[in-house]
Image 1: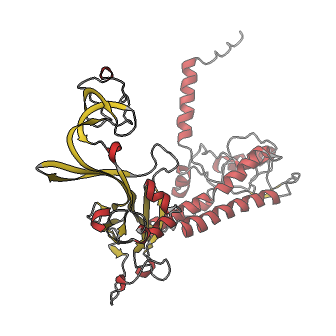
Image 2: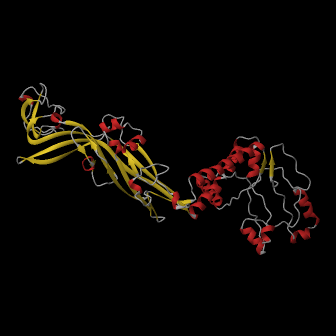
Length: 479
């Protein structure tokens, strides 16, 4: 009677087999195997990648970025400013109290360089400005009484009245009259403004390192009363002329004084605290901050009014001021040697050098000739023998996945092993037979040349498909 054919495994059995395989592979241990490849071009690629990685970490990471230091950014900072100077307009002399707004001396302040003055404004009714939309009219029917335009100057009365000059008419409003556009007078204050002096007193503090410093040098004899800033000779005399600031920002002073603008004075404190405190110096830079190339938002101006009484009625002078606004901005970073970032970056550098090995392995396994030979030499699978021994070193070797040493030298082929067993069957019961040789001879070097045959005395197998290689555990047992 013919034997029944085995049934193919069902889906559940296949799933259990896959699960067992995955669970078994989870507990495998992998260790690198060193193979020396005698290939000049591959060696050049390997050393070039290592050299590039080494140069990157030595030059950029450690020298440029100073990654061996613990750093702190954004110092605690205070800024005090003071402006001095006088100037003339067509009608009067202007001093600091009039052209500097606000007068507190903070990090942001404005210097007025041109004004448009509307004097003697009182509460009443007058013609609306022609710049307001729908303000022009031909008759009273064009003006709606009680209408309030948020971009206008007041509440419309419903009358159409002549404009301040010309033959045009606009709707009448109840507001401060006359309105700004109808009776303003322009005055230029920028004639002597380039000679204004600005004292910028700045002090910084890095709390992590307990380091503080200021930008004014402690000198006697009234040093600050006679000096002006120079980047080389007078670095610690922070007295700047307004013309110098505008020039360093690469702007035209006359144009800037007419339209107004915002200039940033940037003070940068980059300090290497591994050096002396005298090496920590401020660096000044100047640039324009407002978008001057966009007509809709270029320039800088603001309005304010001065109130007084004439014959018991409240009167004011409205001033639209154009000026140069100065923003003092303080940046900085301090660094000092620390062991923790040094160790972290050194470990990163040493780990990154292994990228060269990964790249060369990828080239060998993908592009080069005999990549299958290299793959066979590189990846071996070692499995645990099934029998055990009572000796504790051998037991430890078995626990770690090692086999005990064979009692006889490895036989060149299974036939010889069988011959040894037939010579003494009584001894075969006491002494285990010799083991077969490993299926793949251990190799330290692979030369990019035709393979040579195994020499005498070296055990080798023609089969390259063997899954397990039993290794010697005598070295571990001797521990």
